[in-house]
Image (cartoon, rainbow, N blue to C red; front, side, top):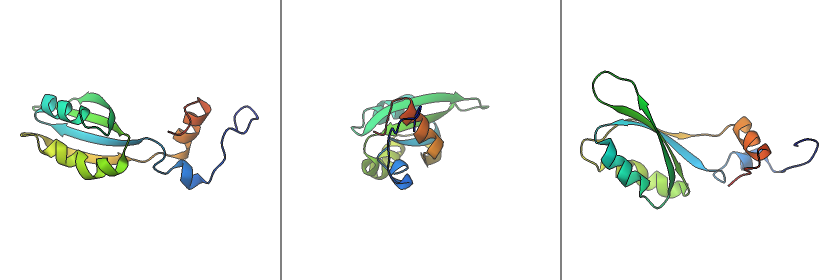
Length: 113
């Protein structure tokens, strides 16, 4: 419901399933320009949002990689990153949406992709 109007109706599992965009959170260091060039060019990658992390020594970044094909990402994303010499992955996690995020997206007009 949004302002008294039914916007969408479905079981909760449908809202939290793979129908919505899938995003991976990745923390890495090493040859970041080469990794970024490779990852952003993968056919199933929609976007890569990069955030530099403060550390002593090596440059670390945290990336939010949004993909259009969850199965392809499961099979190829981490392998692609690790194929770059000097790339070190310290965290690799699939972000799981919660109901609040889905609700806000629907109410703001984004719907489920």
